[in-house]
Length: 92
Image 1 (cartoon, rainbow, N blue to C red):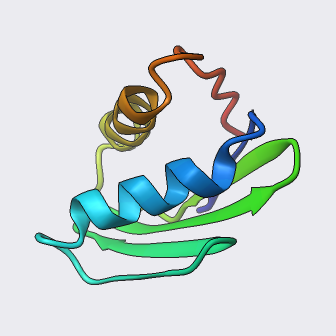
Image 2: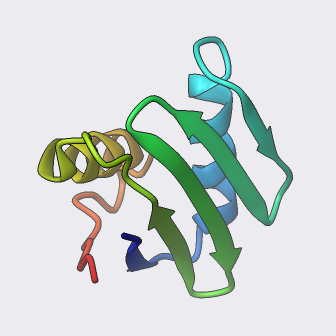
């Protein structure tokens, strides 16, 4: 299962870098200005910065609480996007 949200923002690069740096002390991360991946315990998080959006892809482990996973990621991104939070996450 894969969950995807296209989050409208012009600051996607900034937010993905901040989230990757934030979690780099706990989890394995790999990122640059346009793409980021976090080896999160509930499953991998992949992000891609686009000019007008941040694409967020979650791949929950079979035993992951999906609603908690979505909430943790959205809440953390909202902290970095406090000027435009809450960001709209429409998971598909």
